[in-house]
Image (cartoon, rainbow over all chains, first blue to last red; front, side, top):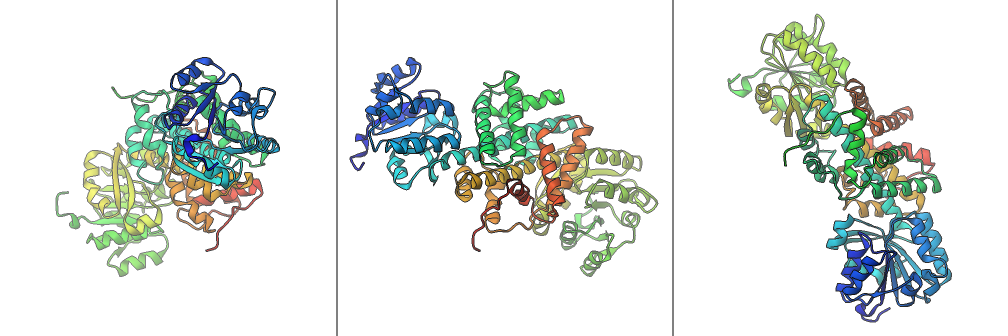
Length: 304
Length: 304
């Protein structure tokens, strides 16, 4: 593991909105890279940039010292790891599996135990910062795993993100991400509720935001989202469907770890309503749409 | 009204934790000041500083060009304004009544209409920043009322606060304050939920906070409150009982203006539980106590 860093052979599984630009950064950094993806178009793009395509996760593992997965949800990661064509079928002892997907900590811990039987080290490293962060390599990366594995992976993380924090042992990255989503969802829903309240009670929502964001209500959400909403822009950003997926992971953890989360439960159901309304591809700040519908108004928009 | 500013005769009703230091700042600025308070001790302190004591709100109004009220709740303000010993009984046409209490917008608008019949101008100017803000004259002041009244009051506000924003016509200050409390309560509850989740799932809450407060979860609450909680400090700050009172005002407005607020409803009930637990005199961030009890754990504290 103390060969020169670019000699480390990497694998990347899951070339979606996040994974594709991330894999691109690793290629540009000079790492030999083997990629796999369910659909072939994204693989072809990376092969054109110098990556090697693999037909299965097993083949990726066989070619790699470190395999990164960036997949939508817990079952996707599980499917890639186990089975005759899975990562473990191709892994040699000493391989590191960095899972940068956002999944349930319970799944992470189960997979880590299974991988340990193969002498494969599991590092959970979910990110925040969205597709913009993935494209600009400015992701926040929350890492769980032992200190040795963290240090070994750090040069890789530095090609992908800006804020890289080792939280604790396996699963702690996923816990931090879940905690992040509890707060983000709370801010999004509160912003929606207060915008609708301001307008319906007869105050200019824009002036209310200006007044309150300088005090104890200040948050990233109020600093970044209202101006887009006032321009009528509700496109992502961070898709509501992903926020909802992450909130379901949080609620699964609430059950597994016996942590009653009354507020997050309501926020999850409001995002559920947003998905039911067919608005899952909009930004998470567009949760205001659900609150508009409940109050039967539309938020004012400014001329663009 | 364009006499030299310190010649304006002020009245101040409500010399509590907030009102007393505020009245003190106005005295120090050189304003002639008549004060009234239900209990006499606070009045005596201000008289020692040069204020004149009045037996009733009516007497305060008779001695003043501008009367400021700083009272706990809507009924308190109503009681001070109406009746044979009330503010209106002593008011001359042209008097300005600045209500800096946090009360329901519906009450503010009703009082403003009533006062208009006496040619008294109502300005609603609730604050945020707590007793520390009151003592240091660093309050945020959210103002509702016409432009003329706002301009006339601005020199007074500048002795009391730092961030002074005119939101719109009468009631708009109270609307902004209600919106502020929607967000503050959401952040406090989300922080409580995520701290308990982090610890019970097995991550160090302190490291989780460090990891997430640099990203989309960033907020005033995460920047200012966790370090106190980790030291075991749950004293105010801003009392939970006041947060609960303000949330009840928000929920009254939700009913009056027909704005369903599902998340704030839950947050209100969690603060209700905190009051039932006898913790109303603690800081609003101590809402984590309710979530600790639900999850049957105690948040770790560091040595001081």
